[in-house]
Length: 133
Image 1 (cartoon, one colour):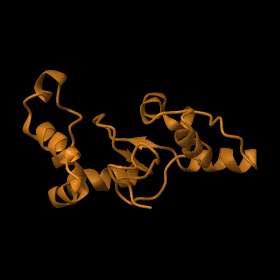
Image 2 (cartoon, one colour):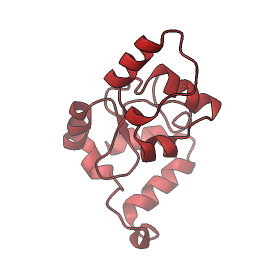
Image 3 (cartoon, one colour):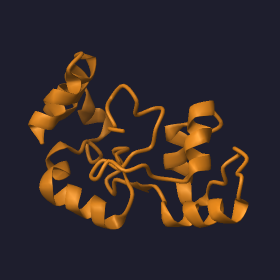
Image 4 (tube, helix red, strand yellow):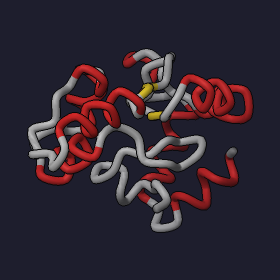
């Protein structure tokens, strides 16, 4: 599974290594609407108990603790599976594309925000984002 703009609201995937992040229950909650990407970012996925019933509660708890959702430190909403992936992403490309430090007042005219808004509307938006990286 590859995270792209079309499925980012339906799956939590690390922006660096593309593995699923969060527990299976949390992924199911995202699909069923019990949680949203925003509620996960605001609540911290490690502290959110999934509402989706688990077959093995002990394994689910262990899995949840091992696969926390690590948000971008700048607050842009990009997600990672680990601190290592977050740091690697920051060093390689994310520092150039992160909009987390841009204030709401600047956002309307900031070129990076305008670029991201423009590419988001394009059917081949992921190719633009890969090229930018």
